[in-house]
Length: 165
Image (cartoon, rainbow, N blue to C red; front, side, top):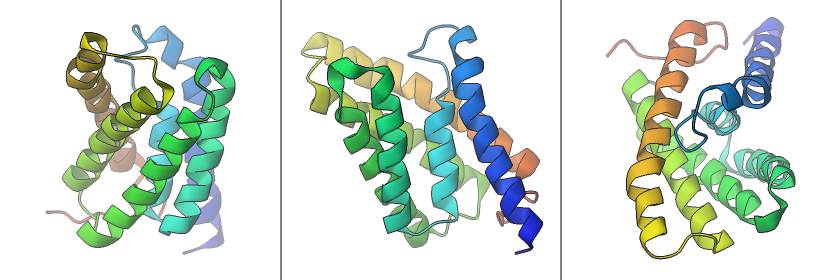
């Protein structure tokens, strides 16, 4: 990997974080809009080890929790677990395919929403069912679509190897 690849990679991740705070609120319902911050974490896990991904997930979760102090800690826990598990899953499933990465983005979003809902205790009963069976899959699909688009457009630029299959 060339030295400039590292800067390009960090520029894309910083762009996703910027989109989280500038564009996401304008995309409609927050339950369906793609989560650019989580997407940046999941793209980071493609090139990282599980331990490093867990630490970055913890930092991302704390950043997210600073915006929602009512359930402080739930986001940190969720992002830490998602970061660790996605990096570990990437190592097991050889995530060099756009479809596999799309599935990683979808499952990461859904799992994060599940952990936040259970750890925060804010959703109960029927509302939890709606969130996990309707809103989380929709947000997972939009996040996966944006993630696949980012990898398709900037995969070579970020030095992420994707197979043609």
